[in-house]
Amino acid sequence: MILEGYAVKLGDNIDTDVIIPGRYLILTEPEELAIHVFEGVYPGFHEKARKGVILVAGENFGCGSSREHAPIALKSAGVKCIIAKSYARIFYRNAVNIGLPLLESPEAPSKVDEGDLLKVDLIEGSIVNVSKGLRVAANPFPELIREIILSGGLIPYLKARFSGDAL
Amino acid sequence: MNVFEKILARASGLREVAPGEIVEAEIDLAMVHDLTAPLTIKAFQEIGLSKVWDPDRIIVIFDHLVPANTVKTAELHREIRAFVAKHGIKNFYDVGRGGICHQVMLENGLVKPGQLVVGADSHTCTYGALGAFSTGIGSTEMAAVFATGKLWFKVPEALKVELTGRLRKYVTSKDVILYLIGKIGVNGANYMGVEFTGPGLRGLSISDRATMCNMVIEAGAKAGIASPDKLVKEYLEFIGGGPIDLIGSDDDSLYRSEIAIELSEMEPVVACPSSVDNVKPVAEVEGVEIDQVFIGSCTNGRIEDLRLAAQLLRGRRIDPRVRLIVIPASTRTYLQALREGLLNIFVEAGGLVGNPNCGPCLGGHMGLMADGETCLSTSNRNFIGRMGSPKADIYLASPATAAVSALRGVITDPRGIDQI
Image 1 (tube, rainbow over the protein chains, first blue to last red):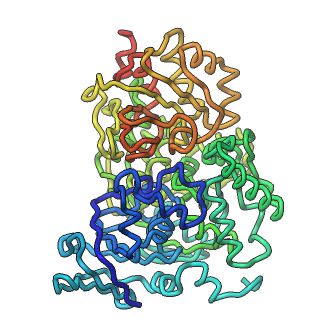
Image 2 (image 1 turned 90 degrees about the vertical axis):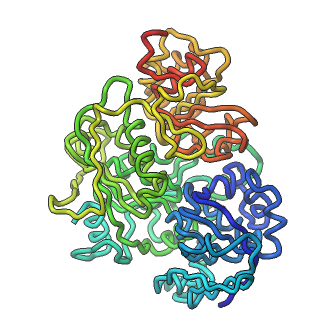
Image 3 (image 1 turned 90 degrees about the horizontal axis):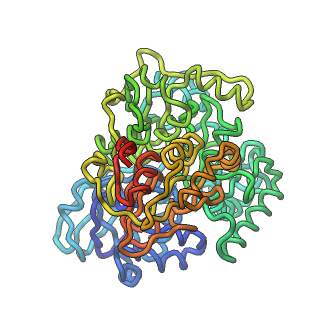
């Protein structure tokens, strides 16, 4: 499973309130949530992301709320994948569960500039910075998480394992 | 084993577990509120099951947007009520019947020491005050729990916080947890269990412990637990929780790291904009002008918090430049504050008392901030845009600091109350 997109760079501790403010949590349709993603701090992100982007961030991406609206909004806005030095744990689980791929890479922020074209191989867990002709190391997924990501999220994963009331 | 390992081992039917191990554990209780239930229901319906795993272990609480602030919210509430009725969920707390989910869970005898509890809210870690392993999860995972009653967990490494001594007057457990987050940083306990223990814990009430466990998520922790003791037993006997078994860490437990805190050395602190670890002694930011003071939330909206604030506000008037919003955390807290005459004190001081709900804390409903305004809040997050405008500043502090600052109209060390 190979993904391609242009990098959008963000800093450390990007929190869930910044990704999608609390007043929008009554929205349950991904497309409605996407319009408001990052609106308080990154006006125009929604337009930019529409073409398909890969976020490259620092430490503790997604800290704060358990709101699944955050990864849903990012995915729906056109974020194909997130690469960060580290993640807050609930966000990490939520992203995996809704099928938004994410990789942990301590060296990505120093090897990627805004706008670089990136190629990500989710099965290998490898990243290539096509614009700079560089390989960027990433931590491999634990087996279970890789299976969920490749199924497209927790619901398709559960449906593939079980069916109907036999669950 | 430490308390986190013991609880996960029991819940997954294993004799022993070790940090880093992935286990599949049986869930004792699963809680959703009005903002996370709709996505949970949607995901549960996608799985295609006709029944939830156990309607008696599912708890549904309306607290984030109550009463409904928009037609859209009202519709979501209606959908959740229909789900509750269809699946026979008895532990349902509708508008006006419960309050903030975490307080409702603590005060109704639902949570017990040693349980494994998940909630579709990040501050689910609050129940560590009663010795439970409780943690926040997302809606899709909650749907999987509704379906199977099980969830996978990575056994966390643990951080031990050894407390000694006693807090001085007008210094609270909120100051302790803010101090700790300031010291270790907003991801200083990422993925970890934080255990509060030591002789100093004995002097801290269940409410004090709830405040500390509530905010371990602000350092990235998976769960926080205050080593359960006699006080937990007495509390649960008082509220009628039935027989309990206190599960604590073994003396030879292993921890990733340990921190010692002498409570008598603590002083009032604030978390400055816009990060919970930007913690400074109140003395250093004294004089910062504030437009709004909020006393409430799952962190500091309990009766003990309201008593402390009322004690400082009694017979005084807040500064005319400030608006004070006080929101008791639950219906029980509201009634208790009413009986004790605390609500009169807040209103007579010039404050507004709201119905139990999450209110201004998440900027969803009631008390949102405008561009350029500053709020001093007893809640748990000061992220950009958390309480409304991304151009508003949020400071976090204890109810004592909040009350005294409301009187002065500027951030003020509560220990100076006698000069006012």
